[in-house]
Amino acid sequence: MKVIAAVDIMGGSVVRLVRGNPDDKVEYSNDPVETARKWETVGADMLHIVDLDAAFSTGSNSELIAKISQAVRIPLQIAGGIRSLEKAEEMLSMASRVVIGTMAYREPEVIRKLVKKNADRVTISVDQMGGMVMVKGWKESTGTTVADAILQFLAVGVDEFLLTSIDRDGTLQGPDIKTLADAAVSARIIASGGISSIEDVIKIRSAGCSSVIIGKAMYDGKVSIEKVKAVA
Image (cartoon, rainbow, N blue to C red; front, side, top):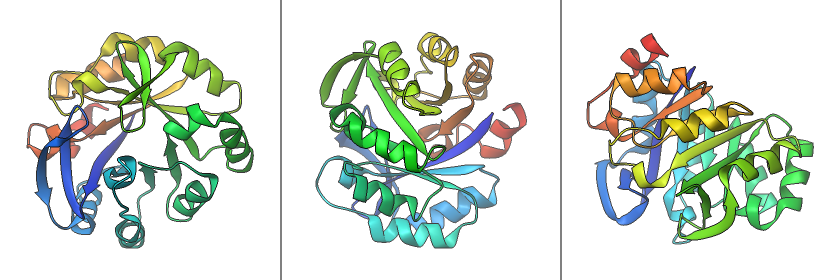
Protein backbone atom coordinates (compact mmCIF):
# COMPACT_ATOMS: atom_id res chain seq x y z
CA MET A 1 0.00 0.00 0.00
CA LYS A 2 1.39 3.39 -1.04
CA VAL A 3 1.84 6.02 1.70
CA ILE A 4 0.98 9.55 0.56
CA ALA A 5 1.61 12.71 2.61
CA ALA A 6 -0.91 15.54 2.33
CA VAL A 7 0.17 19.13 1.82
CA ASP A 8 -2.94 21.33 1.84
CA ILE A 9 -2.21 24.93 0.88
CA MET A 10 -4.35 27.97 1.70
CA GLY A 11 -3.14 31.54 1.47
CA GLY A 12 0.38 30.28 0.85
CA SER A 13 0.49 28.29 4.10
CA VAL A 14 0.16 24.60 4.96
CA VAL A 15 -3.14 24.04 6.77
CA ARG A 16 -5.57 21.33 7.75
CA LEU A 17 -9.32 21.91 7.70
CA VAL A 18 -11.94 20.11 9.75
CA ARG A 19 -14.58 18.56 7.47
CA GLY A 20 -13.44 20.91 4.70
CA ASN A 21 -14.56 24.03 6.56
CA PRO A 22 -12.26 26.99 5.72
CA ASP A 23 -13.34 28.68 8.95
CA ASP A 24 -12.12 25.72 11.01
CA LYS A 25 -8.47 25.37 10.18
CA VAL A 26 -5.08 24.91 11.79
CA GLU A 27 -1.99 26.42 10.18
CA TYR A 28 1.12 24.23 10.41
CA SER A 29 3.69 26.03 8.28
CA ASN A 30 4.15 29.14 6.17
CA ASP A 31 6.59 27.25 3.92
CA PRO A 32 4.88 24.57 1.80
CA VAL A 33 8.07 23.85 -0.13
CA GLU A 34 10.00 23.01 3.04
CA THR A 35 7.07 20.92 4.29
CA ALA A 36 7.08 18.95 1.04
CA ARG A 37 10.83 18.34 1.36
CA LYS A 38 10.32 17.18 4.94
CA TRP A 39 7.78 14.50 4.00
CA GLU A 40 9.98 13.37 1.13
CA THR A 41 12.96 13.06 3.48
CA VAL A 42 11.11 10.84 5.97
CA GLY A 43 10.00 8.45 3.24
CA ALA A 44 6.62 9.39 1.79
CA ASP A 45 5.99 7.56 -1.49
CA MET A 46 4.08 10.50 -2.95
CA LEU A 47 2.79 13.97 -2.04
CA HIS A 48 -0.89 14.91 -2.27
CA ILE A 49 -0.90 18.65 -2.94
CA VAL A 50 -4.25 20.38 -2.47
CA ASP A 51 -4.81 23.97 -3.60
CA LEU A 52 -7.60 24.92 -1.22
CA ASP A 53 -7.85 28.46 -2.55
CA ALA A 54 -8.53 27.06 -6.02
CA ALA A 55 -11.01 24.57 -4.59
CA PHE A 56 -12.99 27.40 -2.95
CA SER A 57 -12.55 29.69 -5.98
CA THR A 58 -10.79 32.30 -3.85
CA GLY A 59 -7.34 32.26 -5.44
CA SER A 60 -4.53 30.06 -6.70
CA ASN A 61 -1.30 28.55 -5.37
CA SER A 62 -0.03 27.38 -8.76
CA GLU A 63 3.31 29.16 -8.38
CA LEU A 64 3.95 27.46 -5.05
CA ILE A 65 2.97 24.09 -6.49
CA ALA A 66 5.43 24.62 -9.33
CA LYS A 67 8.17 25.31 -6.77
CA ILE A 68 7.29 22.12 -4.90
CA SER A 69 7.46 20.10 -8.12
CA GLN A 70 10.97 21.42 -8.71
CA ALA A 71 12.07 20.88 -5.09
CA VAL A 72 11.21 17.20 -4.63
CA ARG A 73 11.87 14.02 -6.57
CA ILE A 74 8.99 11.86 -5.40
CA PRO A 75 5.77 11.92 -7.44
CA LEU A 76 3.09 14.54 -6.86
CA GLN A 77 -0.65 14.32 -7.29
CA ILE A 78 -2.40 17.66 -7.42
CA ALA A 79 -5.98 18.38 -6.37
CA GLY A 80 -8.23 21.36 -5.80
CA GLY A 81 -10.04 23.57 -8.27
CA ILE A 82 -9.08 21.68 -11.44
CA ARG A 83 -12.21 22.53 -13.40
CA SER A 84 -11.07 22.76 -17.02
CA LEU A 85 -9.07 20.65 -19.44
CA GLU A 86 -6.49 23.43 -19.69
CA LYS A 87 -6.05 23.56 -15.91
CA ALA A 88 -5.69 19.77 -15.74
CA GLU A 89 -3.00 19.81 -18.40
CA GLU A 90 -1.20 22.67 -16.63
CA MET A 91 -1.13 20.64 -13.40
CA LEU A 92 0.00 17.51 -15.25
CA SER A 93 3.04 19.45 -16.42
CA MET A 94 4.05 19.61 -12.74
CA ALA A 95 2.78 16.29 -11.42
CA SER A 96 2.41 12.58 -12.02
CA ARG A 97 -1.34 12.66 -11.50
CA VAL A 98 -4.24 15.08 -11.17
CA VAL A 99 -7.22 14.54 -8.91
CA ILE A 100 -10.47 15.71 -10.47
CA GLY A 101 -13.65 16.29 -8.50
CA THR A 102 -16.28 18.83 -9.57
CA MET A 103 -15.42 18.79 -13.28
CA ALA A 104 -15.70 15.00 -13.45
CA TYR A 105 -19.35 15.12 -12.41
CA ARG A 106 -20.33 18.35 -14.18
CA GLU A 107 -18.49 17.76 -17.47
CA PRO A 108 -17.90 14.03 -17.93
CA GLU A 109 -17.08 14.49 -21.62
CA VAL A 110 -13.98 16.49 -20.59
CA ILE A 111 -12.88 13.59 -18.39
CA ARG A 112 -13.18 11.24 -21.35
CA LYS A 113 -10.84 13.49 -23.34
CA LEU A 114 -8.42 13.80 -20.44
CA VAL A 115 -8.33 10.07 -19.76
CA LYS A 116 -7.91 9.25 -23.44
CA LYS A 117 -4.79 11.44 -23.52
CA ASN A 118 -3.50 10.62 -20.02
CA ALA A 119 -4.84 7.14 -19.33
CA ASP A 120 -2.96 6.39 -16.10
CA ARG A 121 -2.59 9.93 -14.72
CA VAL A 122 -6.15 10.79 -13.74
CA THR A 123 -7.64 10.10 -10.32
CA ILE A 124 -11.30 10.83 -9.69
CA SER A 125 -12.19 12.30 -6.33
CA VAL A 126 -15.13 10.61 -4.63
CA ASP A 127 -15.90 12.89 -1.68
CA GLN A 128 -18.86 11.39 0.10
CA MET A 129 -21.30 12.40 2.79
CA GLY A 130 -23.99 9.93 3.76
CA GLY A 131 -23.08 7.81 0.76
CA MET A 132 -23.61 10.63 -1.75
CA VAL A 133 -20.85 12.31 -3.74
CA MET A 134 -20.26 16.00 -2.97
CA VAL A 135 -18.58 18.64 -5.18
CA LYS A 136 -17.75 22.38 -5.29
CA GLY A 137 -15.56 22.32 -2.21
CA TRP A 138 -17.84 19.68 -0.62
CA LYS A 139 -20.80 22.08 -0.62
CA GLU A 140 -23.07 20.57 -3.31
CA SER A 141 -24.44 17.06 -3.72
CA THR A 142 -24.24 15.41 -7.13
CA GLY A 143 -27.13 13.10 -6.33
CA THR A 144 -24.83 10.20 -7.25
CA THR A 145 -23.92 7.36 -4.91
CA VAL A 146 -20.31 6.30 -4.33
CA ALA A 147 -20.88 2.96 -6.06
CA ASP A 148 -22.51 4.54 -9.12
CA ALA A 149 -19.78 7.17 -9.42
CA ILE A 150 -17.05 4.54 -9.41
CA LEU A 151 -18.82 2.41 -12.02
CA GLN A 152 -19.40 5.48 -14.20
CA PHE A 153 -15.73 6.39 -14.35
CA LEU A 154 -14.38 2.87 -14.56
CA ALA A 155 -16.37 2.63 -17.77
CA VAL A 156 -14.40 5.50 -19.36
CA GLY A 157 -10.99 4.16 -18.34
CA VAL A 158 -10.27 5.79 -14.97
CA ASP A 159 -8.07 3.43 -12.95
CA GLU A 160 -7.93 5.07 -9.51
CA PHE A 161 -10.25 6.88 -7.09
CA LEU A 162 -9.61 9.06 -4.05
CA LEU A 163 -12.34 8.26 -1.53
CA THR A 164 -12.81 10.76 1.29
CA SER A 165 -15.48 10.60 3.98
CA ILE A 166 -16.19 14.29 4.54
CA ASP A 167 -17.71 13.83 8.00
CA ARG A 168 -14.42 12.35 9.20
CA ASP A 169 -11.88 14.46 7.36
CA GLY A 170 -9.61 16.34 9.74
CA THR A 171 -11.41 14.92 12.79
CA LEU A 172 -9.09 12.02 13.76
CA GLN A 173 -12.26 9.97 14.40
CA GLY A 174 -11.14 6.99 12.31
CA PRO A 175 -11.78 6.11 8.66
CA ASP A 176 -15.05 4.84 7.22
CA ILE A 177 -13.84 1.28 6.72
CA LYS A 178 -17.09 -0.14 5.35
CA THR A 179 -17.33 2.44 2.56
CA LEU A 180 -13.65 1.94 1.70
CA ALA A 181 -13.93 -1.85 1.66
CA ASP A 182 -17.06 -1.80 -0.49
CA ALA A 183 -15.38 0.50 -3.02
CA ALA A 184 -12.11 -1.45 -3.06
CA VAL A 185 -13.89 -4.55 -4.35
CA SER A 186 -14.17 -3.02 -7.81
CA ALA A 187 -11.48 -0.31 -8.03
CA ARG A 188 -8.12 0.96 -6.86
CA ILE A 189 -8.88 3.17 -3.88
CA ILE A 190 -6.83 5.86 -2.16
CA ALA A 191 -8.17 6.17 1.40
CA SER A 192 -8.49 9.57 3.03
CA GLY A 193 -10.25 11.06 6.04
CA GLY A 194 -10.29 10.45 9.78
CA ILE A 195 -7.05 8.50 10.13
CA SER A 196 -5.65 8.86 13.64
CA SER A 197 -3.46 5.84 14.37
CA ILE A 198 -1.41 2.98 13.02
CA GLU A 199 -4.39 0.73 13.79
CA ASP A 200 -6.47 2.79 11.36
CA VAL A 201 -3.82 2.26 8.67
CA ILE A 202 -3.87 -1.49 9.25
CA LYS A 203 -7.67 -1.48 8.86
CA ILE A 204 -7.36 0.46 5.61
CA ARG A 205 -4.80 -2.02 4.31
CA SER A 206 -7.09 -4.91 5.28
CA ALA A 207 -9.98 -3.19 3.45
CA GLY A 208 -8.02 -3.60 0.23
CA CYS A 209 -7.08 0.02 -0.47
CA SER A 210 -4.12 0.64 -2.78
CA SER A 211 -2.93 3.83 -1.05
CA VAL A 212 -3.51 5.90 2.07
CA ILE A 213 -3.23 9.68 2.52
CA ILE A 214 -1.89 10.79 5.88
CA GLY A 215 -2.76 14.32 6.92
CA LYS A 216 -3.76 15.73 10.30
CA ALA A 217 -2.54 12.71 12.27
CA MET A 218 0.90 13.18 10.76
CA TYR A 219 0.99 16.93 11.39
CA ASP A 220 -0.19 16.46 14.98
CA GLY A 221 2.46 13.79 15.62
CA LYS A 222 0.00 10.95 16.23
CA VAL A 223 1.57 8.85 13.47
CA SER A 224 4.81 9.04 11.51
CA ILE A 225 5.47 8.26 7.87
CA GLU A 226 8.11 5.74 8.96
CA LYS A 227 5.69 3.80 11.17
CA VAL A 228 2.91 3.94 8.59
CA LYS A 229 5.25 2.57 5.95
CA ALA A 230 6.24 -0.26 8.26
CA VAL A 231 2.66 -1.59 8.31
CA ALA A 232 1.52 -0.45 4.87
